[in-house]
Length: 454
Image (cartoon, rainbow, N blue to C red; front, side, top):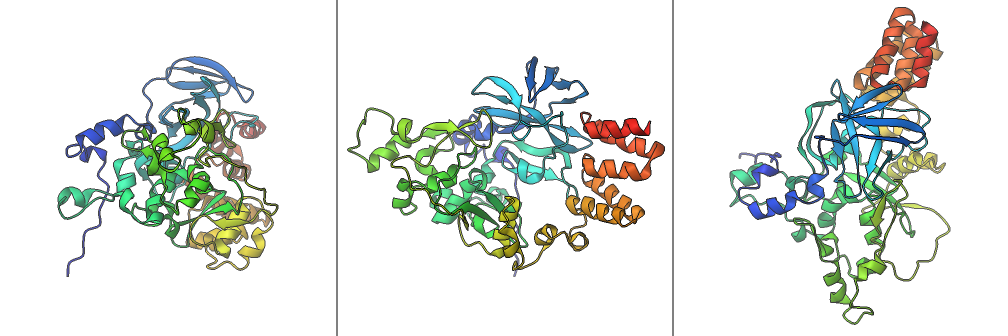
């Protein structure tokens, strides 16, 4: 008996010959334009988080150095952030263009930095919701093949599944149609990029990147949310906000993202959906969403605004105790422990002590770095922290080897570079610091260490 070939991703261009109208319409949507190679950025001068910047010739200049604008992230409906590549490693630039306020400012997470940082790595999980057919080099934290992704934006296959077998035999092998799936499988297609929760924990032996349309996302990851609480307004909290709405709850799951959104052409069917259930509602001459789904500031991105999908009516009563639960499926001690730990909640320990299996994610939280590295030899956190333990015990040669391995996964890990330079000293230590500063020239700590060697 022959096994069926596993379908592979072929790219949206392969869909266009048979679906020209859909392909043309979708190409103009924000989802299709959510990433790409930078072509041109207008010159500008501005201050962000206390730092002075200048944009010229598609480069970002600041007092200590400069970096190129290589790739963009975001459709520019709300704004656009930027990435640069050095030696195949991707990093985020510290400035973002906010379209709603028409200004440059600090990228999310950089608002309180006291120096210009260019060493925030872009790992595949981060890139995956903005670009398609990404090409990570495994065994590294943020290195990619050239180019790092083969298709900018969210591809057809992100929602319909890999298309190689359908193209080979379209009459026999059909693509996934999200609207025809069971409730959880259907909602998982949108949730892969529009659900953030308080934490997302990979299930044992699974990775978020392995999810394919038609499956349940909860089989790959567990999303944790606060029980019986209105979710915070975040940039990608649409799914959990909608789930908290009375409209969604009373529809018994029939209402979903596709009820209001026509994805292929970015059409808005919200008013039609409201009228179907509320034919005698007040102010029918107005848009229901203008009052009940207002756009509000987001908690996780400065200058960001998003539509509130909780469909506001009467306010929900506040719940005193904050308890994490799974958004879909169940949350075991491992998922709860890792989620609470991610949030800095002391309840993490009691769950982690009972966690099964005690895999690398759990072992890392207990500082059992040698065991982590036996299972995951390129784990950068374990490499850096075990190196510190070895150095404190006088095992400096072993520590240095670990930090060298960490810098192979990502050459801009500041702790590894600074620690290694302290051990190597002299010309070798100077070379280590100079190489690190080539990636992150604004580092005050590295500049101070280099001056001390001189």
